[in-house]
Structure formats: structure tokens, C-alpha cells
Amino acid sequence: MNMKRIILLVLTYLLLFCLTACQLESTAMREPSTITTADGAASGKGDTFSLRITWAEYSGRGEAIQRIINNYNNEYNHSITMLGGDEDLQAIQALLDGNAPIVYVLPYRYVQLFGMRGDLMDLTQAFELEQAAYYPQIWALGGIDGVTYGIPWIGHAMCLLYNTSLLQKAGVDATSINSLDALVDAMAQIQSSTDARGFGLVGAASNDISWMVNQFIYGFGGALVSDDGETVAINSEQSRAALDFYKNVLSAYAQPTWQTDTGAEVMNLFRKQEIAFEIQGIWGVTDIQKNGSPFEVGILSLADIGLCAEVGPMMLAIPAHMDEALQHQALALIRYLISPDAQSQILLGEYSPEHDAYYPFRTPIRLDGSGGNAFFGMPEYVRFIEGFQNPSIDVPTPAWQIIKDTYYESGLHQVMLGELSIDDFLRQIETVGNEILRNNQ
Image 1 (cartoon, one colour):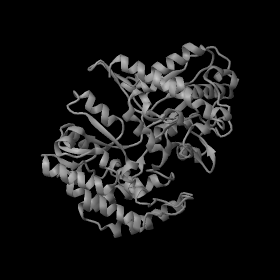
Image 2 (cartoon, one colour):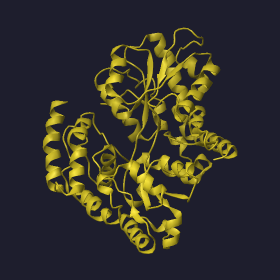
Image 3 (cartoon, rainbow, N blue to C red):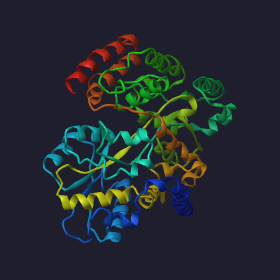
Image 4 (cartoon, rainbow, N blue to C red):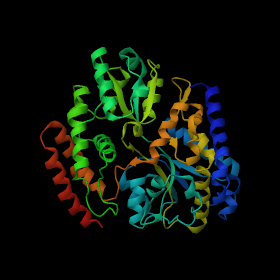
């Protein structure tokens, strides 16, 4: 992506915000220029705090976020620092227990967990007006029992990516792929006309198999837990049909090593043009661009084929016991980070010195970031926003993380290997899952 396209990208996003601002006007959304005064935060470089991200500070995305923090500090005369980090649950808990002066970037599932434990500040009233700028399904992921603990910042929604060259060689019209049956037909045509396999499938006991399979379960009308999150709901005909399709239909068009492959192996096969389709986030596109663009990547919304996209919203959260003066400054920082100006800076992406170019690594989540076919100045990328509207939630309640880590991922792997039947797996998860949910209410 050259600099001219980057500038177009930013200008387009800002234009989109202006065009959609009328729709949000009735909610009296705060403007970036009133951030500090709206929260009572006086400018100046007194006591300060840090923003802890979940990437290394020296990484491309760490440097991209650091530029945004630098802009904030310069504009409002603050001295906020940025800390690199990861998603180590125990490390984050230790920082919270030590009352470290930190604003956290956390995955939604951690926001729910720490919020339930009373470790995070209640942001419900402070951001009541901003709620209208998000899909309700995404906003709800930042809270528990109607209390908001995390504000959506950036994220991803999975899409169906395809190799346009392979489809053209096989005579497949991508616009005709509007159902799972149509996808199967397309894969069969590709395998009969090229040397490539149809689909990159994940079967290894890993985090990837969980979210991959869940997209089919939700898409087939199933659910992991009940609406109130108190009972396991996966043992259903819908889930059974989804698992049968994944294991017994898709596998016929998958790479030979699918039963032990994670998403990393799938990306590598897609890059080498050994598979025609894969389900990935926006990085699945930029990975091909970074490797010389041997082919153009096509993008289809998972909703187009009847599936729900796995989403990974990263939330901004404040410790419950942060000093009151710092809380005001922390609120001001969050308002800036979710503002259209800062969101447009995220769209610039991370810089690759190797390619002297910028690549998006996540997308904004706000509704006013989806402006139709002009999104990003790159029409195809609108697909990565559409998935937020009807998402697949990998961890629908905090206790599901225990079920996932202890039984779900390994059980799915056994199903894919043929070591455990689909029916036995569903019964097992229902039994042990309900016990875990009862013990963790």
C-alpha cells in the first residue's frame, strides 16, 4: 500500500464519519475537542499513568499505537506512556491487584472476567452516549449483567478469503458463492480443474479449532450456552449438523494434514497457493501483500454463506481502584482513542520496513466506520466490519474459558481424528460444562 492510498484511506474514513454523524447527532456524542474538559481532566504533566497494550511495544502494531499516544500527548499536553504486554491472565491480575496506574487494552473475555471480579471501573454512565455508535452485540461484550466495564476500541471479524487466480482458472464465479452448498460446488470445481485443495481446515487441539468450529455452530442456529449464560446449550441438532458438515463435508476438500493443522499452517498453505479458500481476519490479506502479492485476495462475508464471523474486540478498561484524579485523565484518553481521529490513525496500520509500506492489522468497530463500499478507500475491506453485526462469540460467558481450555479444544480435536463421536462429544461438554458453570456462578 503506497502513501497516496494511505492518505486516501484516512480521508475516506473521516468523510464517512462526517456523513454518518447526522445519524448519531441525537445521542449528543462527545467531540474529541471536548474530551478533557468533559471529564474534568486538566491538561498538564502531573501524575500520569500508562496504557498497556497486548502486543510488544517494539512491534509494528506497538509502534503504530505509540504514534497515536504521542499525538494525544502533544495535543493535550499529557505524558501518557505505553507499555507492551500480552494476554497473560496472571500477569494482568497481578497488576490489577497491585493497583498499578494503568489503562488496559484487554480482550472482551478478560473484561468480563475482571469485571465480574470487581477489578474494573464501572463505565456504564460515563459512556452511555457512546453506546449508540456500536453494534449492540459488540457493546454487550464489554459488560456483565448490564454493567459496562470495557469500551470497544479495535478488533477483527473473520471472513472467507479466496485466491482469485485459482477461482478464475477453475471457472468459478465468486459472486455465485452465496451458501455453503455453493461453496462446496466451488471447491469441487477447483479440485477438478487445478492442483489446489479447496479449503484450509483446522483440526489441531488449539485455540483456532474452537473459534473456527463455533462459527459453524452459530451459523447453523446453535449456541454454546443459554441466553443467560447459566447452562450449556451446545448439545443440539444444530450443533450436531454443524460438526458433521465441518468434519465430514469440508474435510473432503481440505489439505491432507488438516487434522493436526492450526491457523498458522492454513495461512502458509494459502500463501503457497495450495488451498483456494481460508477463513481469516484482515491479516490474511496483508500476509499475501507482504509476501509479494503472488495473487489477489478476494473477500466474502461469512454471512454470505450462512455463517457467523468470529470476532475479537479489544476493549479499553480502567482499574476499579485507580486514583480519582487519574480516572478523569483515563476517561479522557479512552474518549480520544475511540474518536474518529484516533480510529483513522489505526487504519494507517503498522509499518513494514522490509516493504516500506503500511498494512492494517485490525479494524475500527464503530458503526460509523462501516460506510458502505467506500470503507478504507478499499471497498473490499467493508467485509471485515460486517461480521460484527451477527458475531460468533468464542467465550460467551467467563466460565466458558475453563470449559474451552480443559475439554472443548481437546474434545474437538478427538472428534476430528475420529477418536470421539460427535454425539459423545456434545454429551460430554454438556455434562462437564454444566458442572463448571454451576461452580463458577
